[in-house]
Image 1: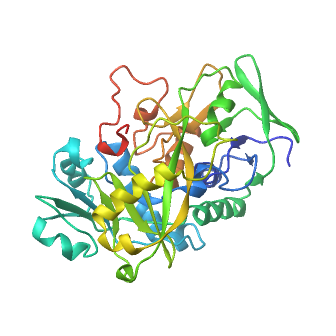
Image 2: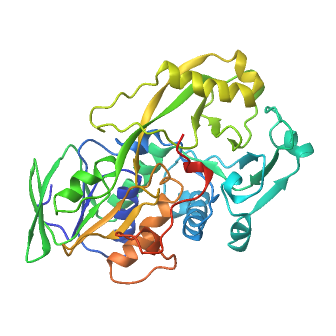
Image 3: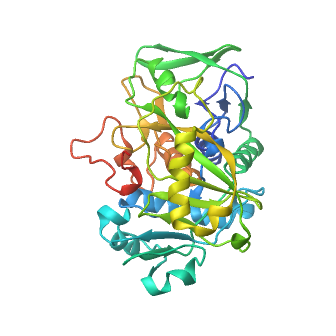
Amino acid sequence: MRRAADVVIVGAGLHGAGLAMHLAKAGAGSILVLEKRHLAAGPTAKSGAMVRPFFSQAVYIQLVLEATSIFEQWDDQIGGEVGFVQRGFFRITDSLTLDRLGGDLTLMRDLGVPYELIAHEDLSRISPICAYHGEESGVLLTKGGYADPIRTTVALAAAARRLGVEFAEDVTVTGIETSGGRVDAVVTDKGRVATHLVVNCAGAWSTHVAAMVGVDLPIVIHRVPTALYRRPEAFRVEGPVVSDGVNQVYMRSAGDSHMRAAHFGWSADPVDPDRYDETISRAQHDSLRTLVDRRFPAMRASPSVGGFSAVYDMTPDAHPIVGPVGETEGFWCNCGWSGNGFASGPAVGRHLAARIMGGTSEVDLSTFAWPRAPDATARPDVNWVHR
């Protein structure tokens, strides 16, 4: 591990690896990424990894549209195979109003998101495996999809390494040295690294890193369950990701033999990310099973094959914290994505890198500044309703 670097990134999840690559492309000099375990060891590994610009605020839509383009041209732009499946993202809803739909269709249209409104009588054409009720309708994002989160991170790290970035795994950051109001070094259990620029991409551990420079980030780590099922014969032909806005649960394929399902939002279940229960409880399983069976009748004959729990790094308003933070010069953050960071991950690093290098970016990241602007508002859509 090098003992000095122009930039030190803490955390080798999707955002850390992506930022490292974009900084290297921007000519940031020597870059070292420190990871306490291994690539994608934290929340990234268990991400639903869906890619869909279905939001109510422009910054998210812009970032995900850019990330979608990257995924579509991954081999040419990044290199490596990331398992990107692009069969659409299908939101089922009982109302097209923002508070029920969860996305601003007018804003999405104005920003160039391709989508189709699906009338009730046509829903079965999009996803014949579902049961539909009442006056439900749908929105199909034709370019929506998902990828493999671990392979995506590994590919970004490989691209960064080709540009000279060093990744040091099994290295724990224990402190950040400062003097004269600026960063001087990062201290680890493997030695000291001199640097004047640190970017906190530590995900579920970002509050610990920020505390090293006296910054108290309002991020709480919550445990969130996902259920796994054997894929039924009725699902032999893969369709779009089904995002059930009525029952607030999504389901998509998880390989050739299994399906995965999870709630949209989150229940208050604060945990220590180093010691939380990574399984799924019976009550959590039964809650998801009820909603899944209601929308997908064929799943009633499909056995459960367990599940797991991930963690979300939740901020009070569900927006991430991106940019310089605190009074210490040279300390930046890219964290607190609240379970919503994968879709924009390959793109946000480019815009953050431009700002770190002293420039500007085409996408305005001011919504994510900390502290928040006085007129900042919380994410209003139903994806993040407390259950």
